[in-house]
Length: 309
Image (cartoon, rainbow, N blue to C red; front, side):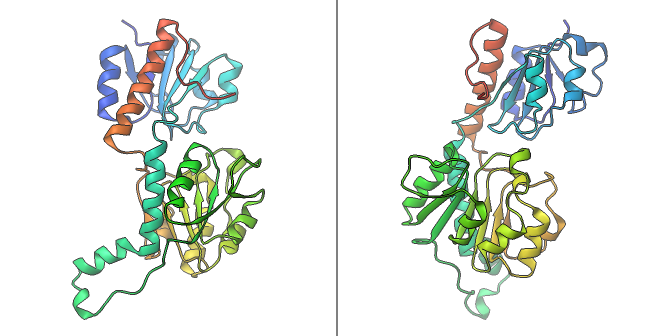
């Protein structure tokens, strides 16, 4: 039987096993290597949030009718090209909101209170030489959020528990009590911690640039759980090296899995491997939703979570 599902991304074993058990799957890469004549039979494509689904790849798949993304972000998908062909695109929103918001606060606390350097301080036997340096208080501080969507709102709710004052930036003012700034630079100038919770794409590319970092200032901290492309990593590395910024905590990067080399040797940056949603419970829920979208397509039923628009 010819494969009718193309898998182009690394997926958790819990999803991959069910995918191969329930569907006729061809495993490839983002370039569609090794497709050959099998390309003509592919009706569904499974990707993850970091995948690049290009117009060129879509052109090689004449029977494709759906792109199923394991993840909330789909900025790597050429949505315009898909819509021109009538190809549906789905993702897995909502189910990862809590984990990402939790992890944003973990990163914020980790960089402000210096938990990674403190761990090394103890392991290296330096505690016996005297106490560790003081760190930054979080409770009562000013928090700015770039992107007040599902995840941004969940971060704000958690920050309220720390008595933080909250402001945000976005294209439009929302019906919330938080202060709104249309300009990200103005927001950065008014906060102590700036959290990126916005998606990627051309509209947000390097939205956090050298000018925004300068506005955040030498006492400010940047946290990114949105997309790596939103932050100019070269500018960030320079700001951290020169202490024009107090610190940064990043779970996403411009060129994953390769952070900017200028970040790797710094003690005022906390780096994690795009793991904000990586809990067993959430990844199971994401896998279930991915399979539900695929099953609905092949059964001719309404798709559970098509992308908006």
